[in-house]
Amino acid sequence: MGFFSAIKKMFGGAEDAANAAQEVPAEIDAAAPESLAEPAAKPAAESAARPFAASAADEALTLRLREAEPRLSVWLGIVLEGVDEAGDLLWQRLFFLLRALDAPEAEAQNFVRDFQEWLTRMDYRQVEEFRSELQYRLALALDMEDEEDERNRLFLKISLGLSRTREQFSKGLDALFAGHGELDDAFWEELEELFIMADLGYEPSIELVERLKERARKEKVTESTKVRQLLMAEVEEIFRAPRRIAAVNQPEVVLMIGVNGVGKTTTIAKLAHRDRMQGKKVMIAAADTFRAAAIEQLQVWAGRVGALFHARTAGSDPAAVAYEAMDRALQEGVDVLYVDTAGRLQTKVNLMEELSKIRQVLGKKHAGAPHRTILVIDATTGQNALSQTKLFKEAAGIDELIITKLDGTAKGGVAIAVAMQHHLPITYVGLGEKMEDLRPFSGEDYARALLGVKEDA
Image 1 (spheres, rainbow, N blue to C red):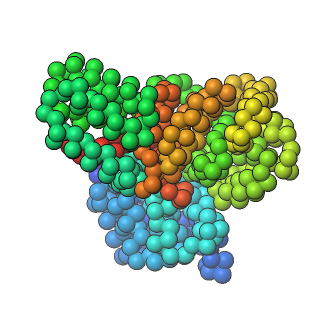
Image 2 (cartoon, one colour):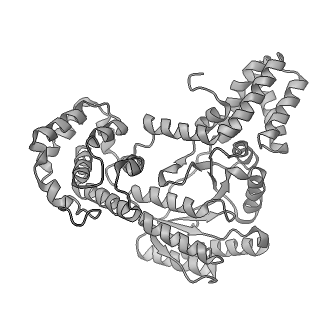
Image 3 (cartoon, rainbow, N blue to C red):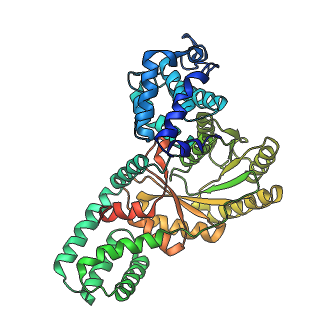
């Protein structure tokens, strides 16, 4: 969408917010989207065309939005009051909110229409079924994902995802601190064992202990109780991603790799969904032609998120699929092309040759492609994720990592090990099955959640 900057105006002060909201009644005189979720009901266009802002109820809504704390969750709560299910009232309120935020009329219509279509596909009617998805879409469209409320929701999900690892790790740290006053050899040996048990692996555990020893020496720390903060700082440093050139020659081409079963298909759908909510034209190419089910699943997800889809029949040449998709993306003005690939490590040599061929044909058709190669790894697999990263990095090259299945069974220490051993940035984490459950990775939040460190500690 083109109204990302509108929210900056809203945060500029209450007076700006008041002016933006006050302008809405005079402007809502054009058609809003036709209701696709309720074909038998009066179209939302006709409903929104009424001067509903002139009524006492809508004047009150305007005033409440003007006076409310400038946070998306607060605004959405006000807009959804008295709305129990999808219908004309919901479409009017959403259109009202977007126009209050200076969204161009056509873009506000498109947002509401897209959401109506999604509700129809998902067969959702009750607000409680889709409220979190609606807030997520608004946060993306309005460039508000870094809002405090959104970050708090993300931190809670990460904390839940790391609960198993944190419980074991924190207990071990507490016992270690209680048993050692000074930082002696015995302390460091026990800490190394604790890291290994937390799924860091042998070599990464040794490296992390050495880094902590060096940090303790530089900061003149001699007491064991202060090591938790040293560890927090070191983990943040490990996760700190280097700056890189983000500009690409459109379309941006993203090669998705990873073994079967890590959640690669749904991750592609979630990434495409994020791009779609930010107004980008997206295409997904099914170059994993080994599994017919992979093609079908990807096609279903492409339809759900509103992305273009390109595939051949099962068994086709994956590189040919990638080449055709690249050609089509160039012709149709696509902004982002995601290319799915096979993940059959049992045929490692053939797979790596296949990936190399895909990279070659993409680059031949579009200079610089693929612009990013993303490896998807499963947080529940522990040390297997480390070996997968090593194999794919050697054979195909990796630019970034996405860690999926970060739930209560996740082996959280593996993220530290992968980032430290392979010097790769983690860009997103998968926290559940919903579209909103793929979130940007925050090293600070991950470290706090893993170590049980409070923000003000």
